[in-house]
Image 1 (spheres, rainbow, N blue to C red):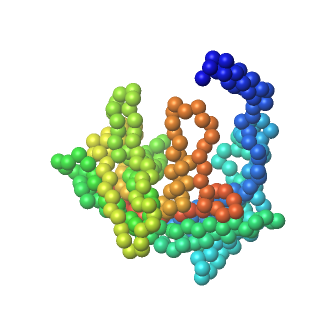
Image 2 (cartoon, rainbow, N blue to C red; image 1 turned 45 degrees about the vertical axis):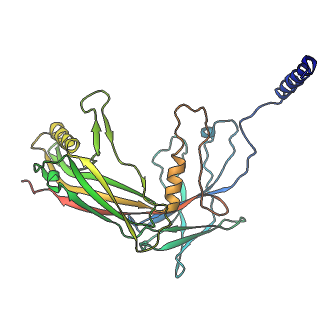
Image 3 (cartoon, rainbow, N blue to C red; image 1 turned 120 degrees about the vertical axis):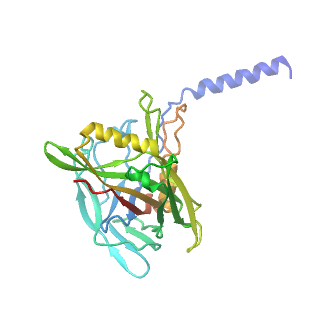
Length: 325
């Protein structure tokens, strides 16, 4: 390539760059209003809520400057299992935080409705003047949780091992699972016994040091969610006994050795079906601390809108502490 031709190519590229810079830049793309739906079914309650609202276009570039909620009212919200159907009604729910939105949360509710384990439900929403939105979710089948190692350590017995072992068995149709360990106890405060609930970490890193951290299990992938009914997968999780004993010792130190009555140790197994797991995993998946990206990944299984229709189920096992006077 001749020097003259190289010069012309560079000059043309520079002109294109300069002219391109004259076009004003905006990080906001074209706005398209759409309905957003959040419905999560579970066996923890026979009352179920649906949250419907519309997306909004803030005046500036900060979405938190928008201080009015956009509830979608007047919609028909229905859940069916193929044999029966349940229509939700309008309701409002008080906000835990009203610093941004002063009005209560507009929602839809149905009660009582006990979810059937292993059954698929279909959500059907007809907004006024809009297209019908649909989605399906499978309520997880019955799971099984057991203590297979060092149960005696929970109530203070000496053991030779370092871990309390938990076995969690879930259907192969379950995509994610979570095992948690809680202790219930009464503490004497101002001459009154007050009930408390505290979660036990599976491990305490660097105990007693400034960098000490409590570590807890998160939702973990079990399967791809496409397994067949009747087949199961077993997972094993451990809770470090030294970390557990440290939490107990700190409670005695906080309230006094004679002012704490331990009641129960509760191990819970939470199963998450495919749609809710996908939403949870994708919405929490982009966590690169070195990135300058401000956008957040999104997931939806709502046909005709955005949001998620999913389900989870909780099973538990309880160990009672010896009765204290």
